[in-house]
Amino acid sequence: MSSTPTTGIRCMLMRGGTSKGAYFLAGDLPTDPHERDQLLMRVMGTPDPRQIDGVGGANPLASKVAVVSRSTDPESDIDYLFLQVGVEAATVSDRQNCGNLLAGVGPFAVERGLVPAGDVQTRVRIRMVNSDSLATATFSTPGGVVDYSGETAISGVPGTAAPVVLDFADTEGAACGSLLPTGNVRDEIDGIAVTCIDNGMPVVVAAAVDLSVSGYETPAELAADPGLRERVQSLRLAAGKLMGLGDVTDAPVPKTTLVAPPREGGAISTRTFIPLHPHDSIGVLGAVTVATAVLLEGAVGHDLAQLPAPGASLSVEHPTGRLDIGIDLDTATTPPRVRRSSLVRTARKLFDGTVFPRTY
Ligand code: NQM
Image (cartoon, rainbow, N blue to C red):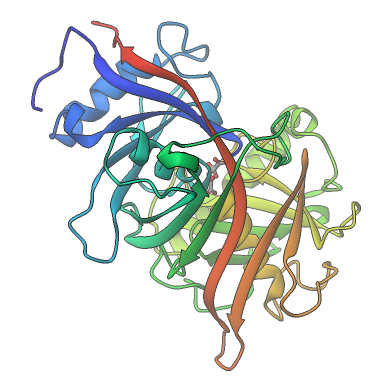
């Protein structure tokens, strides 16, 4: 498709994990990326802090888009391009993945007939176009129809739903090219020890106490601290350069995660900024990346953590609960290599129909 339709565009709204977004077939959107992005901002109601004239949810976690198509890569069934649409800022970025929206991609692909459904469950191999890495989603399709209902609860979402099991391979260096893009397990920025790491999401990990907070504040308390926002921005701007991401002033990555000893029976407590907005929980690949950092000897967070027994999943505490990550590390190399990681999310179809972008 090459021009902006005035008759509306086919769109499905889904909750994926702790995020919410608009899912489109690539063929229903303009092929030119600039034209596509302009259209998506008009769909979501960007730029506007309330996104009142669009379907965006006035929060970065609900201003997201998944663009899905059949894959031409023989190793995957589906291509998934994630786009983070700004809320107040007129931006659309493909510089990060979203493991939360990913949870809805397999079900969406079945709903749109891109992949055949199994009689009991369906396994979809998904190429995450943003980083050219692979994820596999397994979910319930009794009788060949996606079943969203179930007994699985995830922190940050009320109620229960059907599980979507996500397995990741080759997420190391997804955006930066290597797991430890500065070449070090630990660096110092503004006199603060940090670990700059990318196992699917570029993240700067720092100890909360080094930024003069406890690391147990609520997101609202963190948001109300303007000095903290400046300190986080200063850290990530410097880290962006060290990580080879260039000037990240307007980029959604790197994220910053402040870590503290666990208090809820998990391995580590976290407070994450996306990139300056305090996250209500923690992103999926953000959590995979922080969990990886915590396992690395010498990394910030390693000494603060209560590490699980080898082979057991690592529970990342966040403001609204915990996210359990399975990580298979090959410790024979330095630094260790991540063989695979996995976790469970849920997703739900919220609305299927036609979205009408604003015309101005
Ligand atoms: O890290 C938030 C989210 C995300 C992204 C963000 C995500 C991930 O909570 O894979 O899921 O980091 O901007 O949806």
